[in-house]
Image 1 (cartoon, helix red, strand yellow):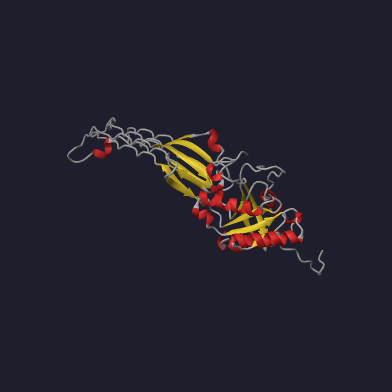
Image 2: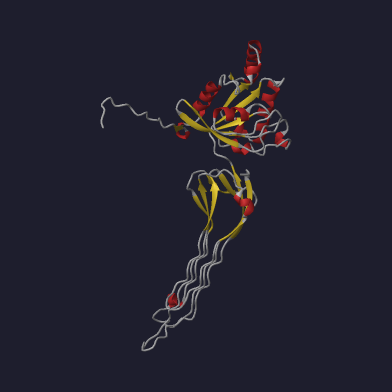
Length: 348
């Protein structure tokens, strides 16, 4: 399934049906009177956050969502049928923006959350509603209310507990593949990851979701490389995992570049809790490890962990460091598998 995190949609709610002007005409009935029914209400356009989706690709192939209009009222006090609602099923984490792409209408952050994007028009009253003691034969009825037409943007920001940051080929996808069942593309050239990937990792009996986004390069905030196109997917994370390639030749420069780019993108993203990890230490000797660790801790002013996603060295310590920064309410506890106990008593 192709990943898509931005889509434009055109919606229109249904108009209300018109009321009916009608009079009762039956054989052997001495007194008639108005009996025009009301028009039916128009259908609304509703957005609903559903589980199991992580892309907006469905809205690439269907951009127009129009609800049905209500039927007109009829004689014999018959009310017209209301139009059916149209449901836009979106992934959790979708933001619904107005046509200017700045005004937020709704932020769909929970499964089952529903928002009315365009309310259907009310049906018009038939002439039965206008009957009174002084006006016993009204010949007026209301037209139905028109529907609402809007152009909206859907922008997906994946819901994850931890987000991976780093230069291309820093080992982000390798880390995700080593700690979860996700199978992102891994190769020895930069920009192998072109779209975000999600994986569920577990440590000490709890699980949390990790998001891997394409690597950043210097000038990403100005549009170089893949730019900051996917940084929005880590905005909702509790903690950022900053991976630095220990074999790049300039790990300090790489670390400072990533910090500068996220500061240029959004100030609040730069102040999120961040775990800095020196990756690929399996290719370094003890002296190089100690030197790079001390240099980075002095320059960045924070603790630097060491890890090799390939050999597994230090991976558990990194996962535990992430776990301490994630809100307890977002962690999912594993269900312990009960092992059947053997009964010594034999029974036929």
